[in-house]
Image (cartoon, rainbow, N blue to C red):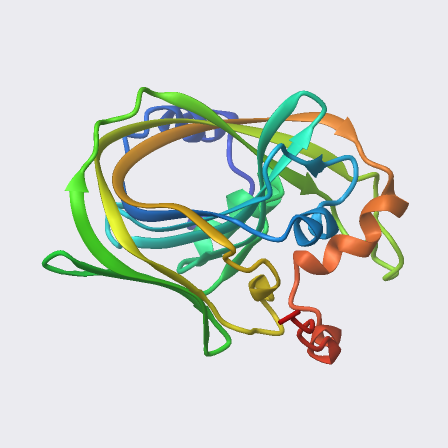
Length: 265
């Protein structure tokens, strides 16, 4: 009988897969990173316990094109500064990806809030534009001009916080207690440039990042980098405390009933 490819793999084949995964070459990406100060009350509102606001109310967008073999990957992230005990890092609210294979490992292994979307980074000489788009809305766009080369930063770890969980089969709560994951990334940068520009946030019922407005820009950069990441479960989370936030992970149809908040003049 011919090999049935959905059938069980042998122990040797499983071991070979693990070995091949451990020998992946460095994968480089070209991406735009923007950091700004935003509304501290909005940051506090989006952080599920036990996460708390960090020292400064910051938001961070990373829009990259990853040089994957065969087909480049568009990868985006919108995160806010957060702290878990003495550890400070970033809590991503949405991570659009252009390929399904980029979703699987991130969501199922680490608990990353990845969703299919359109991610672009385009250059015309020194002019630069980057965007994240879902459901026909470019909910984040960065426009600017490359102005100068910057010194390369030393390799440094960065921690992202994720909640890993499975919604219950009966539709009420979770199948098991959710867990908080610390994902530590070690980045290496081979080129970094300053960008003079702006971050535009557009209203979207499915990706309401406009609730975290740009109050004071910190920096915009264009960089070429590679990274490796390691995740670990640091604690189990109170399901009742996390339940009000799980719509962050999904396109909840009830979100269309949420009106944009009124802005003070």
